[in-house]
Image (cartoon, rainbow, N blue to C red; front, side, top):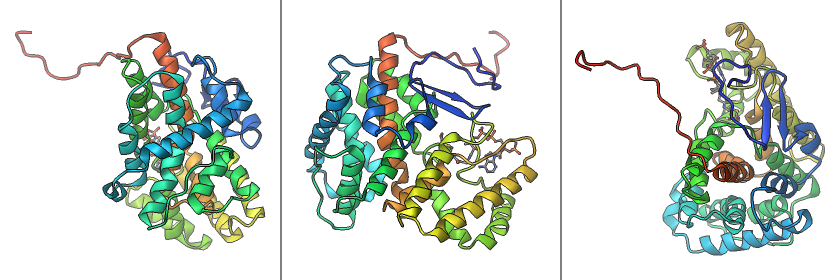
Length: 362
Ligand code: CMC
């Protein structure tokens, strides 16, 4: 079955829908516009996991359960050796999570949902010689992540910005990392194995690895008036512009505007300098203009990663940790999809189309 876009094969899911022609994202029946900035990460994670796990606590208590899972993740990783700090943050998180046993139940899911948000601040503090900060189970996931990263309670506008980000990127159809997680789940391997597959697929720059390079692009451009020349030179070299283009969206990625709104609110609360936002907008306009001229008919527009870079920078995350923050939110989608797939009991096993040689005798 196809969904109207050439070569894109669709399969059933109740979790999310990406309409690439209309630029719409629906998660658990709700449009992204009704979710981002309106509900918490805990609430959307609860919606995604609903129906997938027996014993799921009600929406209100879910926050406490996730808080308790953060404490458990912290205890499990407390003795991680220093060698782990030599890895990129996402690789280090993957290594620590890979040590957790496989399971299929709610406890296993909650631990995995909590883990990246605890491990990331812990690793980032340890690598600059700062003492680690234990989770506070009474806080929201976004508040606690920022508190464990910076040491102080974040402002409301900061924690709202991270919450909006985590909700915006929590699920997105059968993207590469979710598909990888579902394939592993379909073998009945267990949630940790699925999760590690998701983390691994997310890492590449064509998927979740783009926002760090977006920031490097903005830094390389430096001033709005340099944007067009910088972009032309990069495209002459054969580079791709990070933060632009999408396999499914043939119009603007709706997540980009959800995040741009969050960046604007942060700017109003002085989390992003007006100059930084102006630079990003100038780069966006120049890139869209140049891409439409150089790649006519390709419909290349801004994607989620562009304003992610600005948002996460303003919240104090270093560029090499951006993909790991993505994993903190997408964890909800991976777990829900892995479980949805597991409950079907069906192995995913696409057929290959052989185009190699055949011997004359065969
Ligand atoms: N910059 C310059 N040219 C591009 C870009 C870009 N960002 N994206 C696509 N193109 C060109 C590509 O070179 C090709 O040109 P031609 O036909 O002349 O060879 C044409 O557009 C079609 O490219 P494609 O590779 O067939 O498109 P795709 O659907 O495979 O690519 C993509 C999707 C996201 C991998 C690609 O747009 C890309 O590499 N973007 C930059 C990386 C990026 O921002 N990744 C984050 C994606 S959003 C997060 C997520 O949901 O995963």
